[in-house]
Image 1: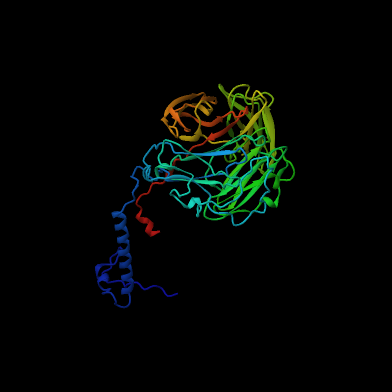
Image 2: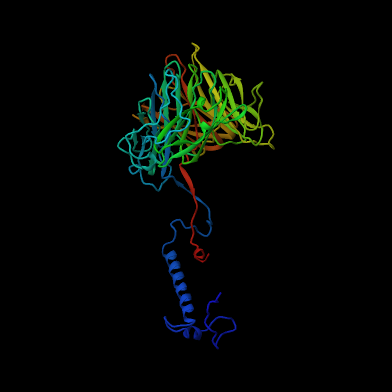
Length: 567
């Protein structure tokens, strides 16, 4: 390999090794031959570096860190929030509403003001172009039918838009007051997508609530719509007895998604090829009945929805004949400690379902967080879960006429095993009619959490549990969808204790309102909302956990670093 030519040393070269002025003068003008080309290259490189440094000096980063700031991150409000809701339940007497809400801003965002941001809910857009190998037959006619993929009026996937389309089911134009609209009213209505931008994005939430009064599948079903993702855990599903449980998959993305549904029972993973490789086309919805992908009747199931490619919104609905129905909420990620808030004082029966990973068994303490702190229920002190399997236990009237939260933790702190947990709770009326709801392990409310659909007249109760030290939270009831003045109240929580708070209602309330919980001090705090609307002598109710609304994100600071061009 030929070595590159360097300018010859001049007689005036100094002892330091640096060329003197005569050496550069001898290089001659551009276009000269020999060593002068190398010198020109060096000069050109120096000129480029000078330009780069000059630009960096003239246009410094907008968030340049000072000498004492180092690389510390800062918080910034989110500028876009996208959520996915499952297909609305229908049937002869089913009715579903969607409620959207953004709490008033707590800072200056970068996405514009309320007039610039638009939040909306629109049907998932395009019909499915491929069907899953496990596409189920329709459930029994007497049960509310989960909807099948269908075309909607929109012509592009929901997630690809940031402005309200002409067929949007509702529009939210300003923070601070919810907007309510009926969901699509047909047995094959698709799932929905919701997008908020600008000042409406931080804390944007959508609640879907369904009332079914048919004998089979009757009950109040509610859930908070979630962002699309690639992994969802559910504990408490079943294919035994009169249960009609199914998984709802909604794809609001611009590309197809391929999904696997993994079922775990008391004998471990239930292998079934029909549960793998389910294709969900862009802008489409699918319902997968669990009996079509399980083997025989399984009393207690954990469900893991995994997207191999793409992203989906996933939800599980459970219906137990005339005994009750509701959505099984997605669990927090597997963890050694799980806290499930929201047990009402009149719980008639509580049924706990826990899954452990294939790598290790789990031995867990069962504790209740009551009004005075943690205590262990007599006769149900612990639960053992074999690796890769599901274990369940009936806790009966575990609350003893006292509101509570349920806590699972390792019996041996040196042997923590991440688990997923769900809890079915039943309430029974004086006439013996009942309804059911499902609770799940959840994360703390953090700085702020909101649930949108609440009704006046006393049917809404907040369950607040401090999982650590004593805490103080601020509860705010928004203006109503048809008018009203917001009100707030502070609530004190004992260490490890649970407090039930009848929801404060806005002054002059008209319509539905939202509830926002903010941690003021202490904690952490987990929270759940119970909406109870007795209908036809059935004590209908639904419970949703409140989770941090992730209205802000960490943004790393940037600083000038000219050395980057030398690397």
